[in-house]
Length: 303
Image (cartoon, rainbow, N blue to C red; front, side, top):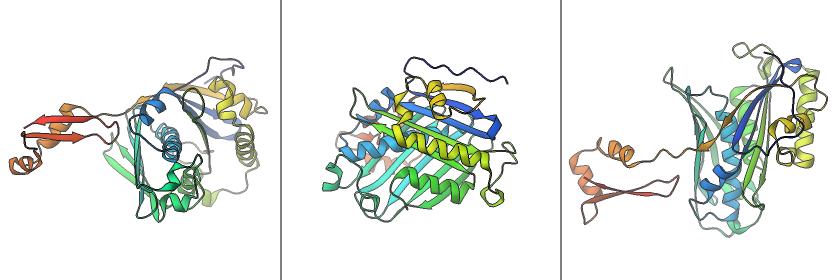
Protein backbone atom coordinates (compact mmCIF):
# COMPACT_ATOMS: atom_id res chain seq x y z
CA UNK A 1 0.00 0.00 0.00
CA UNK A 2 1.41 3.38 -1.01
CA UNK A 3 1.95 5.98 1.65
CA UNK A 4 -0.63 8.75 1.73
CA UNK A 5 0.47 12.36 1.78
CA UNK A 6 -0.21 13.89 5.18
CA UNK A 7 -2.31 17.03 4.98
CA UNK A 8 -1.17 20.12 6.87
CA UNK A 9 -4.61 21.72 6.88
CA UNK A 10 -7.92 19.90 7.27
CA UNK A 11 -11.35 20.44 8.79
CA UNK A 12 -11.56 19.67 12.47
CA UNK A 13 -11.93 15.90 12.60
CA UNK A 14 -14.32 14.80 15.33
CA UNK A 15 -15.94 11.50 16.34
CA UNK A 16 -13.36 9.61 14.30
CA UNK A 17 -10.59 7.09 14.80
CA UNK A 18 -7.75 7.01 12.29
CA UNK A 19 -5.58 3.93 11.68
CA UNK A 20 -1.97 4.46 10.63
CA UNK A 21 1.46 2.87 10.64
CA UNK A 22 5.10 3.89 10.61
CA UNK A 23 6.52 1.13 8.38
CA UNK A 24 10.14 2.23 8.81
CA UNK A 25 9.77 1.66 12.57
CA UNK A 26 7.42 -1.39 12.49
CA UNK A 27 4.81 0.57 14.42
CA UNK A 28 1.02 0.56 14.10
CA UNK A 29 -1.16 3.21 15.67
CA UNK A 30 -4.53 4.78 16.24
CA UNK A 31 -5.52 8.38 16.90
CA UNK A 32 -9.07 9.13 17.99
CA UNK A 33 -11.12 12.19 18.86
CA UNK A 34 -14.58 12.23 20.45
CA UNK A 35 -16.90 15.24 20.45
CA UNK A 36 -20.70 15.15 20.01
CA UNK A 37 -20.72 11.42 20.76
CA UNK A 38 -18.94 12.12 24.03
CA UNK A 39 -21.39 14.92 24.85
CA UNK A 40 -24.38 12.64 24.24
CA UNK A 41 -22.98 9.99 26.58
CA UNK A 42 -22.09 12.46 29.35
CA UNK A 43 -25.42 14.25 29.33
CA UNK A 44 -27.40 11.05 29.91
CA UNK A 45 -26.61 11.34 33.63
CA UNK A 46 -26.03 14.24 36.01
CA UNK A 47 -22.37 13.38 36.55
CA UNK A 48 -20.20 15.50 38.87
CA UNK A 49 -17.05 17.05 37.34
CA UNK A 50 -14.62 14.29 38.33
CA UNK A 51 -16.85 11.54 36.94
CA UNK A 52 -17.20 13.43 33.64
CA UNK A 53 -13.40 13.58 33.38
CA UNK A 54 -12.98 9.92 34.29
CA UNK A 55 -15.64 8.68 31.88
CA UNK A 56 -14.27 10.83 29.05
CA UNK A 57 -10.82 9.30 29.54
CA UNK A 58 -12.29 5.79 29.69
CA UNK A 59 -14.34 6.29 26.51
CA UNK A 60 -11.41 7.42 24.37
CA UNK A 61 -9.26 4.55 25.71
CA UNK A 62 -12.06 2.11 24.88
CA UNK A 63 -12.29 3.55 21.37
CA UNK A 64 -8.56 3.16 20.77
CA UNK A 65 -8.44 -0.41 22.08
CA UNK A 66 -11.72 -1.44 20.48
CA UNK A 67 -10.59 -0.23 17.06
CA UNK A 68 -7.81 -2.84 17.21
CA UNK A 69 -10.53 -5.42 16.54
CA UNK A 70 -11.57 -5.70 12.91
CA UNK A 71 -15.03 -4.30 12.32
CA UNK A 72 -17.82 -6.85 12.92
CA UNK A 73 -15.30 -9.22 14.52
CA UNK A 74 -16.07 -8.65 18.18
CA UNK A 75 -16.59 -6.38 21.16
CA UNK A 76 -14.17 -4.84 23.63
CA UNK A 77 -15.29 -4.09 27.19
CA UNK A 78 -13.31 -2.39 29.93
CA UNK A 79 -14.64 -2.54 33.45
CA UNK A 80 -13.26 -1.07 36.65
CA UNK A 81 -14.58 -2.75 39.79
CA UNK A 82 -14.02 -1.20 43.20
CA UNK A 83 -14.76 -2.34 46.73
CA UNK A 84 -14.04 1.07 48.27
CA UNK A 85 -13.49 4.65 47.20
CA UNK A 86 -15.89 7.04 45.51
CA UNK A 87 -16.35 5.03 42.29
CA UNK A 88 -18.15 1.70 42.53
CA UNK A 89 -18.21 0.63 38.88
CA UNK A 90 -17.10 1.95 35.49
CA UNK A 91 -18.11 0.14 32.30
CA UNK A 92 -17.34 1.06 28.67
CA UNK A 93 -17.56 -1.02 25.51
CA UNK A 94 -16.85 -0.70 21.79
CA UNK A 95 -18.69 -2.62 19.07
CA UNK A 96 -18.64 -1.89 15.34
CA UNK A 97 -17.50 1.73 15.74
CA UNK A 98 -20.05 2.41 18.48
CA UNK A 99 -18.93 3.34 21.98
CA UNK A 100 -20.87 3.63 25.23
CA UNK A 101 -20.17 3.85 28.95
CA UNK A 102 -21.45 4.74 32.40
CA UNK A 103 -20.23 5.12 35.98
CA UNK A 104 -21.80 4.18 39.32
CA UNK A 105 -20.43 6.21 42.22
CA UNK A 106 -20.94 6.97 45.90
CA UNK A 107 -21.67 10.44 47.20
CA UNK A 108 -18.26 11.87 48.10
CA UNK A 109 -16.95 15.43 48.34
CA UNK A 110 -13.93 14.40 46.24
CA UNK A 111 -16.21 14.18 43.20
CA UNK A 112 -16.90 17.94 43.26
CA UNK A 113 -13.30 18.82 42.39
CA UNK A 114 -12.40 20.20 38.97
CA UNK A 115 -9.51 17.79 38.48
CA UNK A 116 -9.12 14.08 38.97
CA UNK A 117 -8.10 13.46 42.60
CA UNK A 118 -5.69 10.90 43.94
CA UNK A 119 -6.45 7.67 42.11
CA UNK A 120 -6.45 5.64 45.31
CA UNK A 121 -9.11 7.84 46.88
CA UNK A 122 -11.18 7.70 43.72
CA UNK A 123 -11.24 3.90 43.49
CA UNK A 124 -9.74 2.46 46.66
CA UNK A 125 -9.05 -1.24 46.21
CA UNK A 126 -10.06 -2.40 42.78
CA UNK A 127 -9.04 -3.85 39.45
CA UNK A 128 -9.35 -3.23 35.74
CA UNK A 129 -10.89 -6.03 33.65
CA UNK A 130 -10.40 -5.96 29.86
CA UNK A 131 -12.54 -8.38 27.83
CA UNK A 132 -12.39 -9.19 24.12
CA UNK A 133 -15.47 -11.09 22.88
CA UNK A 134 -14.63 -12.40 19.42
CA UNK A 135 -17.72 -12.85 17.26
CA UNK A 136 -16.25 -15.17 14.63
CA UNK A 137 -14.67 -17.71 16.98
CA UNK A 138 -17.09 -17.08 19.88
CA UNK A 139 -14.04 -17.00 22.15
CA UNK A 140 -13.52 -14.64 25.07
CA UNK A 141 -10.15 -13.25 26.14
CA UNK A 142 -9.89 -11.50 29.48
CA UNK A 143 -7.09 -9.70 31.28
CA UNK A 144 -7.00 -8.28 34.80
CA UNK A 145 -4.71 -5.69 36.33
CA UNK A 146 -4.63 -3.95 39.69
CA UNK A 147 -5.44 -0.24 39.87
CA UNK A 148 -1.90 1.04 40.28
CA UNK A 149 -0.98 4.44 38.92
CA UNK A 150 -2.17 8.02 38.96
CA UNK A 151 -4.73 7.72 36.14
CA UNK A 152 -6.77 5.22 34.17
CA UNK A 153 -4.39 5.76 31.26
CA UNK A 154 -1.49 4.56 33.41
CA UNK A 155 -3.48 1.53 34.56
CA UNK A 156 -4.20 0.55 30.96
CA UNK A 157 -0.53 0.98 30.08
CA UNK A 158 0.19 -1.53 32.85
CA UNK A 159 -2.40 -3.86 31.34
CA UNK A 160 -0.50 -3.91 28.04
CA UNK A 161 2.75 -4.67 29.87
CA UNK A 162 1.27 -7.39 32.05
CA UNK A 163 -1.36 -9.05 29.86
CA UNK A 164 -0.48 -8.29 26.24
CA UNK A 165 3.30 -7.93 26.62
CA UNK A 166 3.37 -5.74 23.53
CA UNK A 167 5.46 -2.53 23.62
CA UNK A 168 2.75 0.13 23.73
CA UNK A 169 2.41 3.89 24.10
CA UNK A 170 -0.96 5.26 25.23
CA UNK A 171 -1.76 8.98 25.53
CA UNK A 172 -5.03 10.75 26.28
CA UNK A 173 -6.11 14.40 26.45
CA UNK A 174 -9.43 15.75 27.74
CA UNK A 175 -11.02 19.19 27.32
CA UNK A 176 -14.39 19.68 29.01
CA UNK A 177 -14.17 23.48 29.23
CA UNK A 178 -14.70 24.32 25.58
CA UNK A 179 -17.95 24.79 23.61
CA UNK A 180 -18.42 21.01 23.66
CA UNK A 181 -16.61 18.25 25.55
CA UNK A 182 -13.72 16.71 23.63
CA UNK A 183 -11.53 13.70 24.34
CA UNK A 184 -8.61 12.55 22.22
CA UNK A 185 -6.07 9.77 22.39
CA UNK A 186 -3.26 7.93 20.65
CA UNK A 187 -2.16 4.31 20.84
CA UNK A 188 1.11 3.03 19.35
CA UNK A 189 2.29 -0.59 19.27
CA UNK A 190 5.58 -2.13 18.13
CA UNK A 191 4.85 -5.06 15.78
CA UNK A 192 8.03 -5.79 13.81
CA UNK A 193 7.00 -9.35 12.89
CA UNK A 194 3.43 -8.70 11.86
CA UNK A 195 0.12 -9.39 13.56
CA UNK A 196 0.72 -13.08 14.23
CA UNK A 197 4.40 -13.31 15.09
CA UNK A 198 4.73 -9.99 16.84
CA UNK A 199 7.59 -9.30 19.18
CA UNK A 200 6.74 -9.49 22.88
CA UNK A 201 8.30 -7.54 25.70
CA UNK A 202 10.18 -10.56 27.01
CA UNK A 203 11.97 -11.03 23.67
CA UNK A 204 12.45 -7.38 22.75
CA UNK A 205 16.00 -6.14 23.05
CA UNK A 206 16.72 -2.43 23.05
CA UNK A 207 15.33 -1.22 19.72
CA UNK A 208 16.52 2.27 18.94
CA UNK A 209 13.80 3.02 16.38
CA UNK A 210 10.92 2.09 18.66
CA UNK A 211 12.50 3.87 21.62
CA UNK A 212 12.79 7.10 19.62
CA UNK A 213 9.19 6.91 18.38
CA UNK A 214 7.85 6.15 21.84
CA UNK A 215 9.82 8.94 23.50
CA UNK A 216 8.84 11.47 20.83
CA UNK A 217 5.15 10.54 21.03
CA UNK A 218 5.05 10.78 24.82
CA UNK A 219 7.02 14.03 24.99
CA UNK A 220 5.04 15.78 22.25
CA UNK A 221 1.63 14.78 23.60
CA UNK A 222 2.55 15.77 27.16
CA UNK A 223 4.05 19.09 26.16
CA UNK A 224 1.34 20.82 24.15
CA UNK A 225 -1.76 18.66 23.93
CA UNK A 226 -1.04 17.96 20.27
CA UNK A 227 -3.89 15.45 20.24
CA UNK A 228 -6.37 18.30 20.68
CA UNK A 229 -4.59 21.26 19.08
CA UNK A 230 -4.54 20.28 15.40
CA UNK A 231 -7.79 20.52 13.42
CA UNK A 232 -7.24 17.34 11.39
CA UNK A 233 -6.15 13.90 12.57
CA UNK A 234 -3.73 13.66 9.65
CA UNK A 235 -2.11 16.96 10.56
CA UNK A 236 -1.95 15.67 14.15
CA UNK A 237 0.22 12.80 12.88
CA UNK A 238 2.58 15.20 11.14
CA UNK A 239 2.89 17.21 14.33
CA UNK A 240 3.56 14.08 16.38
CA UNK A 241 6.05 12.51 13.95
CA UNK A 242 7.79 15.36 12.07
CA UNK A 243 10.94 13.35 11.36
CA UNK A 244 9.25 10.30 9.84
CA UNK A 245 9.68 9.89 6.08
CA UNK A 246 6.62 7.67 5.75
CA UNK A 247 3.37 7.78 7.69
CA UNK A 248 0.84 5.41 6.13
CA UNK A 249 -2.81 6.26 6.78
CA UNK A 250 -4.92 3.13 6.35
CA UNK A 251 -8.37 4.53 6.96
CA UNK A 252 -10.77 6.29 9.28
CA UNK A 253 -13.91 5.15 11.09
CA UNK A 254 -16.78 7.39 12.02
CA UNK A 255 -17.84 6.86 15.63
CA UNK A 256 -21.33 6.76 17.09
CA UNK A 257 -22.99 6.47 20.47
CA UNK A 258 -23.35 2.76 21.08
CA UNK A 259 -26.28 2.25 23.41
CA UNK A 260 -28.19 -0.77 22.11
CA UNK A 261 -31.20 -0.60 24.40
CA UNK A 262 -34.70 -1.02 22.96
CA UNK A 263 -38.08 -2.31 24.02
CA UNK A 264 -37.54 -5.41 21.89
CA UNK A 265 -34.15 -6.06 23.48
CA UNK A 266 -35.43 -6.00 27.05
CA UNK A 267 -38.58 -7.91 26.12
CA UNK A 268 -36.33 -10.65 24.73
CA UNK A 269 -34.28 -10.74 27.94
CA UNK A 270 -37.36 -10.91 30.16
CA UNK A 271 -38.78 -13.76 28.08
CA UNK A 272 -36.02 -15.97 29.47
CA UNK A 273 -37.48 -15.68 32.98
CA UNK A 274 -40.34 -17.80 34.27
CA UNK A 275 -43.84 -16.35 34.60
CA UNK A 276 -43.46 -16.40 38.38
CA UNK A 277 -40.21 -14.43 38.25
CA UNK A 278 -41.69 -11.86 35.86
CA UNK A 279 -44.72 -11.47 38.09
CA UNK A 280 -42.44 -10.53 40.99
CA UNK A 281 -40.82 -7.86 38.82
CA UNK A 282 -44.13 -6.16 38.01
CA UNK A 283 -45.32 -2.99 39.70
CA UNK A 284 -48.89 -2.53 40.95
CA UNK A 285 -50.06 -1.81 37.39
CA UNK A 286 -48.66 -5.09 36.09
CA UNK A 287 -45.80 -3.32 34.29
CA UNK A 288 -42.11 -4.21 34.47
CA UNK A 289 -39.94 -1.08 34.47
CA UNK A 290 -36.43 -1.53 33.09
CA UNK A 291 -33.74 1.17 33.34
CA UNK A 292 -30.83 1.39 30.91
CA UNK A 293 -27.70 2.26 32.89
CA UNK A 294 -25.94 3.57 29.78
CA UNK A 295 -28.46 6.13 28.49
CA UNK A 296 -30.79 6.49 31.52
CA UNK A 297 -33.90 5.64 29.49
CA UNK A 298 -36.70 3.69 31.16
CA UNK A 299 -38.74 1.07 29.38
CA UNK A 300 -42.22 -0.02 30.48
CA UNK A 301 -42.90 -3.61 29.50
CA UNK A 302 -46.40 -5.00 29.78
CA UNK A 303 -46.07 -8.71 30.48
